[in-house]
Length: 85
Image (tube, rainbow, N blue to C red):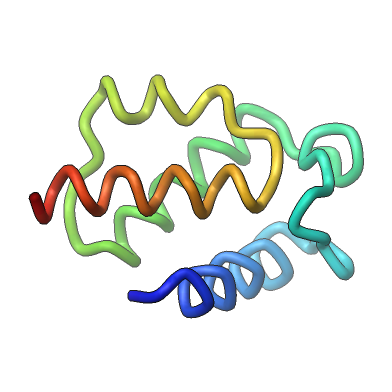
């Protein structure tokens, strides 16, 4: 999946599932959209579905530093490369 395809899917999930309105790629998800740790867990489950594989505990811990949609896209590219490597 290209970064643009990932971006389209992630933005769609954030709008449809988490009721974001016009999320920007550099918005702080927590401060600008009220995204919390429970939302993060739900989003990780959606990412696993999207990618078709389980994310390891270590990879999930790495996700805790995510603050923006760009961070999410970087994170997905990193774990995709690790699993496809």
